[in-house]
Image 1 (cartoon, rainbow, N blue to C red):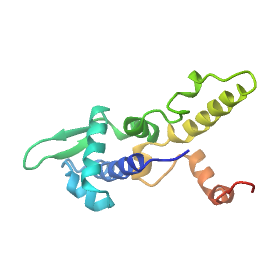
Image 2 (cartoon, one colour):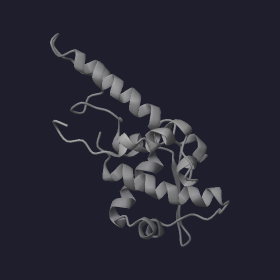
Image 3 (cartoon, rainbow, N blue to C red):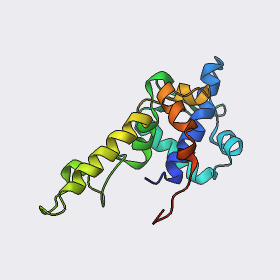
Image 4 (tube, rainbow, N blue to C red):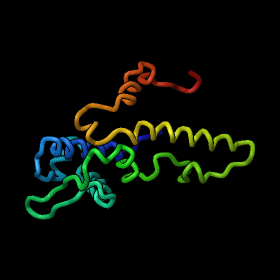
Length: 159
């Protein structure tokens, strides 16, 4: 799995916004402020914020004191929701969802591998919310996986 810059930037910007929500700060956050806080290119961020608005995750406010705020409770927004909003399906094979991929009988086993991989990703990404990220407190299963020493080891072909 590759995490795109769009997904990474979207999540970083949403952590900034959610931390304000947690602190009961009712103000909106400008794209410029989010860009500076997270080192995200401003022009790229504008498109990401628009994607998040279209997905119903963010709301925008126009005007001199305009900016961005959460449109829904961040307890209800998972990492997977954000990734889908900016990049589409979590797992796809050449742009096709794994349940729709067609293989001949010698390679059909690959479809089950892709489905299993998607289920594993969902287990982490759908159970981690913006609140978890903003409070730096991951769900127990995700935290356990992240503390596994083997998870931190890079793998190269043949190893």
